[in-house]
Image (cartoon, rainbow, N blue to C red; front, side, top):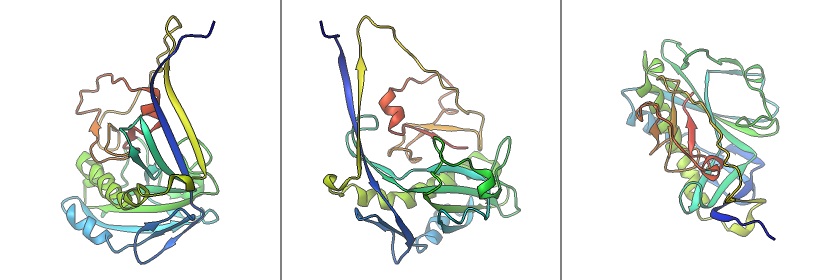
Length: 256
């Protein structure tokens, strides 16, 4: 007799591989493997958060260029966007072969960190080919934020860095929403399935919730995004239940 199951939702993630990343006249991405970044909007983004941010720099780091200095790494961010449904359901488009790397320091040289900073040689500070880190063959887009003095040690300064980076990435997300689904290079389908009568399994994840660079955002507007998210600190560090597909789809954003 077939096992009884209840399907609570379906998540489809379609991947588009990028193998050519460089500077261009504007931020643009296509389904032919090309992505171009432009520095033109960096000054405007910094001015929008001038209370916290002094300036922003952008670099494209090729896979053979990891022997270089980096400020402390605040996050590695995949470029993903919702095309249909809310996070954890529907359809998500994501890029493979490229990651954003958000780094932060203030004008006095104080690195944006909590219990330990990660500035130094990039190839020594990152363990590649692990969950949440780029693969050795991925291109890294370094989004380096220099904050006003003292802001690298405050929640509002660190969040401002995440927010301006998120706005920059959104330009690519908006273009990806119009991709032809048939051009994807990979497709993964996940179901949130309940099996009545079977054991219930709960995975407990302890997350950061102390402040500044020790925070966790949940429920952002976009997968792995920052804008729209809610701080676990502001929610009183209380337990939050998320589904397996919400977790897969990037409903948590580490602010470390």
